[in-house]
Length: 122
Image (cartoon, rainbow, N blue to C red; front, top):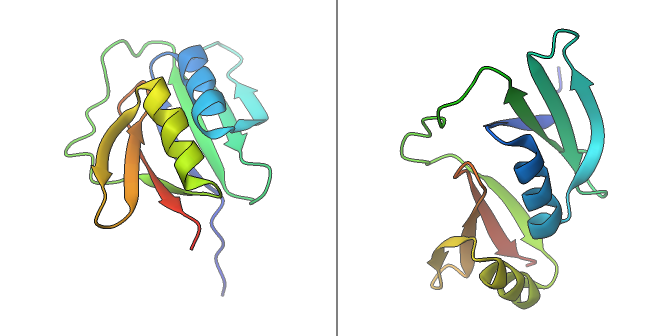
């Protein structure tokens, strides 16, 4: 028996704001979209154009309060082919929320405060 990663999910309050963030910050683009017939939810799957792994953004019509992310100990990680340029871009966007210079990594946070780890190509 063999398993393969397919996607991770983040629930978001403002789908358009999140789509803009992931496009600008990470270059992720929409791969597919599913909308409930009754309008109660929208799923948008984002990809990097290289791997098969997707990020599913879920928007729920009736959700108004921010999601409880606990201590935010879970996160996604992406490799940057030009780490210095990525860092400068994210610094300009104002979305760097934590840096660990000793480990050579940093984190950005999205509009719903999910953390995304940025690591250099090794």
